[in-house]
Length: 294
Ligand code: GUN
Image (cartoon, rainbow, N blue to C red; front, side, top):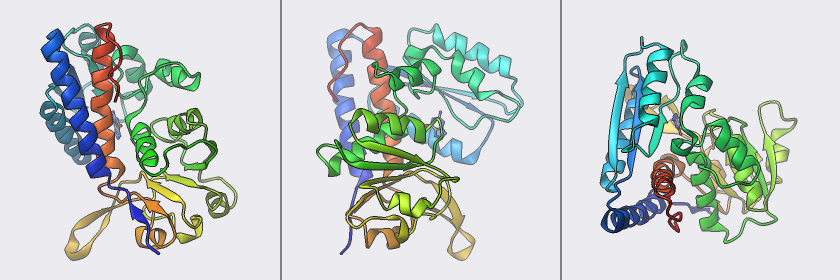
């Protein structure tokens, strides 16, 4: 039997379509155009690609995109000054500082400087705390997208055993919070977990966010489970070219799983779509409007 493929590309396109409609409505009824500022420090090739896609999708959805590039020699104080300026700019509803930052800049200081109401990455301790305590929050985009994908397979996640491999602030921890809020029974596993394959074989929902190419093989997967692959790893391919693979060995896993998200074309497109949702939400909240129902 072969698993159903969760088409993140199509699901993300549908979500962006809904955002585009809501952006249009906001402009028509209120004269508001949501704006997203993206800040890139230095010239990391992978970050350049992400930032380019974010810009295109922001503009395609009818929002304004503001691009800021700082040299990789820029100091932390220069970046903090830019964030202060964006915090005070009424045309900017969302601020995203692309990570990773150069080593001489303290990412936590930078994240903490962003106005929590413009923190469309959901990384500010205020938003992380709000999510953890069940208050409305801007939530990190990748975990947000993962939950949407899981819910295309299961109408409700209530009572399902969910295992999240990885405990980063960007994915693992907030994903566990979101799943718990959906009433799943959540285990956070990681590189020090004892007998990781056995723990994962207990999962109805398995989320792989370790950052190790194709580490999750068939031994980790329960028959019929839903597998969401968060990994984006560049590995050597044919003819000296590189190719992108996930954290899951796709061919192995899809013979056992009930549903699986591919890489590319799974979680990746969802992350950007959810960033647009967050920017729309931030703009609506700023205008004192109810959050759009998407
Ligand atoms: N780098 C990799 N993923 C992300 C993300 O979701 N947000 C930011 N700001 N940087 C990233």
